[in-house]
Length: 83
Image (cartoon, one colour):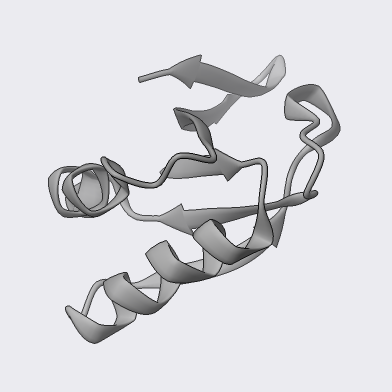
């Protein structure tokens, strides 16, 4: 399974993106940031690969966005590719 994860330094911006995506009918969740991607706020927005363009457009002006990641798993474990 693959998904997109947006990591923020503030909860406020994470919730802004989350609320926007839900308003647009895009599936999204607020999740804890994995240890490998540790950030100060400890939360991120998770969404589907399909929603990549919508989510990236919505996050473009959120100053606390650290980065987006494509998250995927294989036999060796979970991997995070910056996008």
